[in-house]
Amino acid sequence: MDTRISPTSHLIPSRIETLPGDKSISHRAIILGALSSTVSTFTRFLTAEDCLNTLSIFQKLGVPITQVNDEVTISGVGLDGLRVPQGVLDTGNSGTGIRLITGVLAGQRFSTTITGDASIQRRPMRRIVEPLTQMGARIAGCAIEGRADIFPPLTISGAFPLNGIRYRLPVASAQVKSAVLLAGLFADAPTLIEEPELCRDHSERMLKGFGADISRDGELIRLSPGPLANPRPEVPIRIPADFSSAAFLLVLGTCGVPVTLTGVGLNPTRDSLLHVLLRMGANIQIIDRQGDDFEPYGTLVVTPSSMDNVEIFADEIPFIIDEIPILAVAALFSKGTLRVRNAAELRVKESDRIAAIGRFVAAMGGRITEFDDGFELAGPVTIQPFDVESGGDHRIAMASIIAAVCGNVSATIRNCDCINTSFPNFFEILSMVGVAWE
Image (cartoon, rainbow, N blue to C red; front, side, top):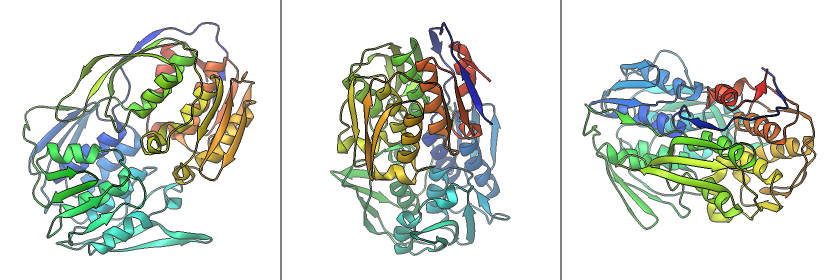
């Protein structure tokens, strides 16, 4: 599907209460709910393709799950209750799904094959295969000529119990950390993870919420194997709105039209873009902040702002990696130069996002210098009408659309079906603020 954006003379200030639930948390809700020995109900579950694929996979593994709109109820089968699936498990476009589920499958008494779409079959998997192999699983993958890594489909011959290991994360990756932690639930001894660069902690929070024996001492995370249970199965758990989805509206608010975003996740390992935008001079107020043992959230009030570009610090990169495409759009409307380095991970996302950002910036008339691990982008730019290919990357597609809206130009963004993988009501929200599209 191609999307055509038309200039509009009047955008509508809006209060948006329908942001989708957090994708990362929705994946983990299904996984840990399935592995617990109790019933769990989650509200504001993200009903996008990525998370629905994870839901479907655990149904195929024998877990009773019901879904009514954005509410899911999971009758957990415990750590020893998963069953042999019929056929290959398909995660679609989800890197989170394939890596985390592989961690679970590594601790089973049966063999499974897991794969994804063409994009996933180009995503590197050695980073999870190596620690899971050290724990005792056997994982066979595929090769791609000219690339020294392991790629899906992955065939996993599980082992139970796995070995508890001490593992130092070679990259700041919440997906790798989570895969090892989930495998650690099936181990015969504690699993220790050294995390020299802090990254997102959704898995640790949810594991703790489900009663896992997990703790942190400095950069060392310790997980002891043991059963999981929802301590309050009668109380639905609210999933916050996805901060990465809210990011597109945050930039729309700073560069285009006032918006109020309710119930947005404010996990401190997730909301770094918010603090970067504030450092750039964005007018964003945080109100109605709430927090519990699960995940904090609040309401963001955003108004158009005069901003200055900044340098992104190395220790911010792991927390802002998914938001860099939309940050590049904010940079187009800000003074000075945005500098992003130490972000080579962008090369192996749903697309090569450094190259993709370079293409859409150039198409819009911007000036960008690419590096192996990042880029420098000068602003402000008077956006010109443009035509750009998303490459099947949902974040590139949405960032390009927001750039066209903020620049008030006509644009064609090609291959936008991918947006459904993470933000199924994106176009509905655009219509709320008066965007003309077809």
